Image (cartoon, rainbow, N blue to C red; front, side, top):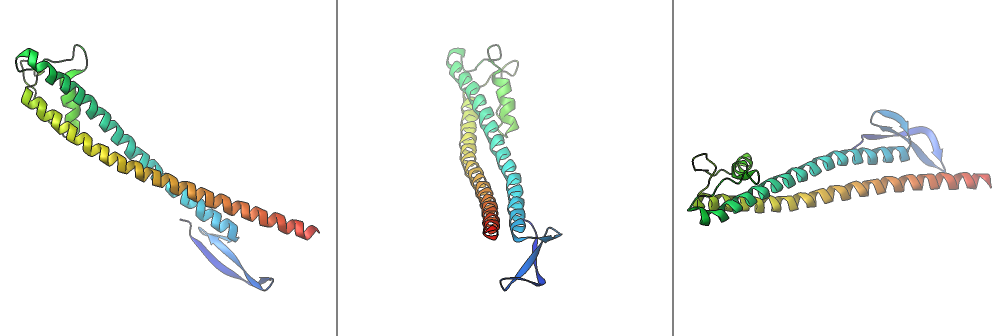
Length: 187
């Protein structure tokens, strides 16, 4: 918010009303309209910074949900192949990035599960179900947090729009007053 200080102009009155000068962020001699506009645009700048932050948070959550969702797909495919492979699922890397990549992605978000088999590219039914359950829980938590972040982002956008409307309204009124004053003086 802009720092605004008002000082009476000694001996200056218009129709018996003392006139004021305003100092806006250390710059003296400003009028009322300029002081209000400076305050509004300073507020808009602060809101823009929080808008960038809020949208970054939403984007990070969306990426996390995407990554965990992809890992869940690979794990589900691996669990589905267990019935035909005698208790172990095979690495799916010949078709897709596979199980090893899913384990790495899940680990980056704090979800760990054990791979087994000769090359460490297989998973047991028990480990697969545990990993699937943990990822689903994490996805639910992230989805709830994302919804809250989206509401916050919408509120910031609304605040920004309201502040812009206020500044625009002040400008229009100021120009309207000046215009009508000039017209009245010309009559």
